[in-house]
Image (cartoon, rainbow, N blue to C red; front, side):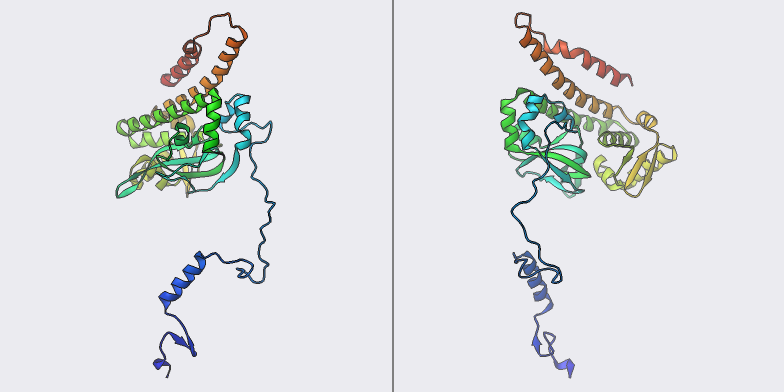
Length: 332
């Protein structure tokens, strides 16, 4: 008797087919349903949105940012953007900027790391840069272009101070030190990209892997890098099996200790000895950006205090620090 009943009718009530029910459920989820009329949990009262939401915490008065770029700014330049800064949390795999899309915000990272991914036809995306607390996310806004060149994805969760792109461009127009600092940072990122190309062609996988671990470790606190073998293989543009083999050799030598989703550096001096010189060159270029930003206000104050004295040459004032730092890098 029950075999004669069509499957779309159960106990006398018409029932739509399975595909139609799935379609209606999907449409209902996408529709804007009043939560007071259709609460998810009937036993719990619906959430009522009030007009007095707590504003996000930004950079308080007198507080120094943890981002290296913001911390190296003079007080006047930092005060110009202090009230526009908004503190946000960075979640793992969160997309900050999409490729070829307009960058609405610029992020000054304070904790965590962000990967710059370049698309490859028919293959996984390739990481072309790693950004941390010494960097910002949103180079296109600094250069005044409308779209982001790369996909920016959070690799290690943390937090950042973000500002609207138009507010930052407006502040750059009125504060020369801020503009010079951000443009120098863009130059450091270009040098990093060029150095990574040289590293990929001239150095072995173990040297590049050690250099990548040291670069990521420089953006974090402690000696643990929360990265997986897959993320490292995408960063280096190699197969995951090759990264696993190289990490196993480092672990056998006592340089690191690895687990599921984390790598702990046990002997950092030996890891630096096993790495190529590329990570030291990249770190030096970023330090020179901060040194130059700290020298410029002092030069300007000296010129303003003694107008009759001959103006000092910026290249001469900056040459000792640059030579000393580069000599320290290449000596190692």
